[in-house]
Image (cartoon, rainbow, N blue to C red; front, side, top):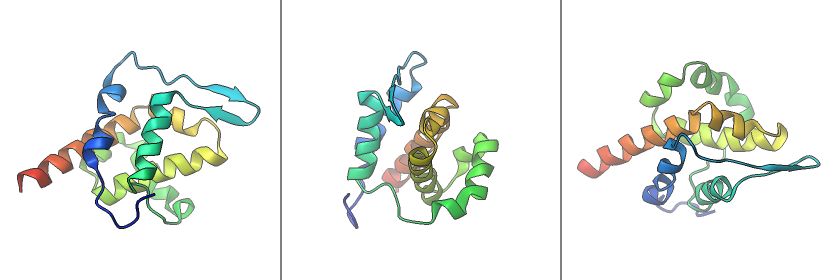
Amino acid sequence: MRENKEIDYDRILKFLPYFEDEYFRFLYGERGFTCIFSDDIAGFVNVLREDGFFISFKWQEWQEEAGRYIDNPELILEAPLEDLRKLLTTFVERDKVKLGYLISVIRDELVLLILKRLKVLVSHVDRC
């Protein structure tokens, strides 16, 4: 993971069309207690990790705030960057203890909303 380096948002946002495609495939297989994601999802998670998008924080203690976004997805479209980073970090970390959690938030289009909001935030910074 690239600590204290500028995040390559364009690299992350290259995945947006994948999540926007209503026919996208996030197929995965189960092997025992392991979930194997499609190359696209695994690639997305790897890019987030490599670019330092995930943040180190006590995500377990942030569940109430995460739940607010999950219960009211429209709030994601107004969320600050730090909350987007916390949400994706929480989704990936929670998937490690609750197999299939990341797939469920992808199916619920929460990751799509996060990427749409990220695109707005990044384009706003580019215009300033």
